[in-house]
Amino acid sequence: MADDTSIFIGASRKPDDSYQRAEQLLLQYGNRHGLVTGATGTGKTVTLQILAEGFSNAGVPVFCADIKGDLSGIAMMGTAQDFLVKRAEQVKLDPYDFQEFPVIFWDLFGEQGHPIRTTVSEMGPLLLSRLMNLTEAQEGIMNIAFRLADEEGLLLLDMKDLQALLANIAERADEIGSRYGNVTKPSVGAIQRTLLVLEQQGAANFFGEPALRIADIMRTTRDGRGAISVLAADKLMMNPRLYATFLLWLMSELFEVLPEVGDPDKPKLVFFFDEAHLLFDEAPKVLIDRVEQVVRLIRSKGVGVYFVTQNPLDIPEKVLAQLGNRVQHALRAYTPREQQAVRTAAETFRPNPDFDCMTAITQLATGEALVSTLEVKGVPSMVQRTLIRPPSSRLGPITAAERQKLIQESPVAGQYDQVIDRESAFEMLQKKAKDAQDAEEQAQQAGSGGSRWTIPGFGNDDPAPQSGGRRAPAPRPSNRQTVAEAAIKSVVRSVGSSVGRAIVRGILGSLSRGR
Image (tube, rainbow, N blue to C red; front, side, top):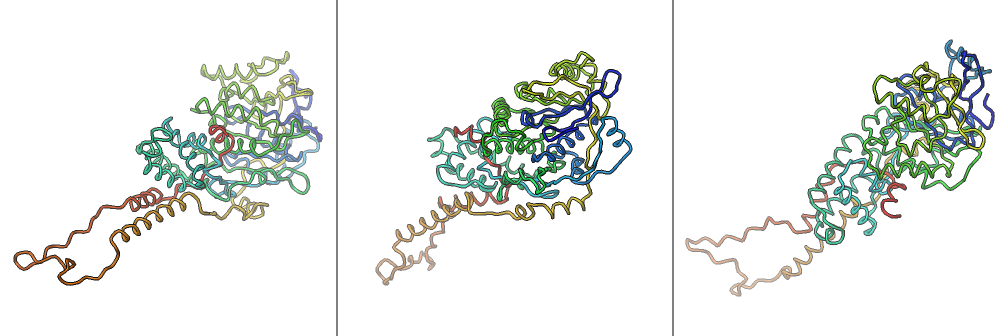
């Protein structure tokens, strides 16, 4: 069984299918990252659940995404069921104790957990451009927008701040273009339309304040267990680009905020990235390079990153090389690409002479996996065919009433519920436009001399009547807007509907700006 230095994963089997030994993950190598792969229905979620339980009991906080809702059961105590008890006997898990775990539920939409927000400024132009799928020219304008915000002291907190700044850039296109390069109004308009699409997809809830404090996902309980932060991601998966960008932002924030700790006895935090292929789908090379850099360097901050996906080919080779602890569930090999995936998975393991790894991957039963973890001195263990242990918490989702009760009793209850809208770029640009309009009106009044006395017969009378006894018509008032009026109307028109609350800049944003 596991002790204070390891997590019990399951029991490996001999060629005759009899018990061989306990398979464990050493806590001191928990920050060397990991990979859990396998086809749908092969047991990846349960593997994620038992790993999260093990890290929590070891005092390590965990952050994970709950794609289908099944993972929420980790908050409730498990119950004895025949197939679970049988599996416990097979892996010699004695005693098989049930327990509930300290869970904090989060939700970008604030419906199934505490809201998670960040600011546009902290998200940075690179991640924001990735989220919006901007072209190279549009990404250039986004970088200019952030540069101007820094130079002019404009806080970019939520989407309406960014909309206001973009409207201001469009009005000053000639001036800004002479300093930073061509800025076209059609490109600015395209960015604004993309922001509107994000708002309609619900991304507006993610941008703003109060922003998430990293310390709140790194909590431990009074009895020394690590809190498990569970992100409700079933609705979020409707916008996979937002999901991937959010998790990438969070990972980069951890890298930027946490201090260097070297090789600790156990991780400071473990981060599970479910549906990891979404992070890399259609991602530009510069973004993949940034991910590889963060994964490689965040280990020294004491953070372990575990990618969970169906196919090992979903992970770029440079990132795959950084993942030391691996659990491979069954894969199917019906198509050439699937056969290539099986071959790739088999070749990444340290071979075991007792069985053919490539054949075994296609024959694994549900809840069975090939397991290889880092042993003493960080050397990968020989791959073993392993029965995964049953979870101690509930297998399956919790009810809506149970979730609501846990949210109300959460240690962060009430801290993120109310949106804070302090003075930022939107209000500052409005004030500048209003001040410019007032100044122009005062100048016009001063130029006209203000009110004056008129003396009959000295040129101040009304125009003389025209022939026919009618006076000449008074000059018609001009409908032409002043520059200030046009500016303020443009700002108000562009930010008429709030588009969202922004994302924290993080290392992936700041690196692109040369910080």
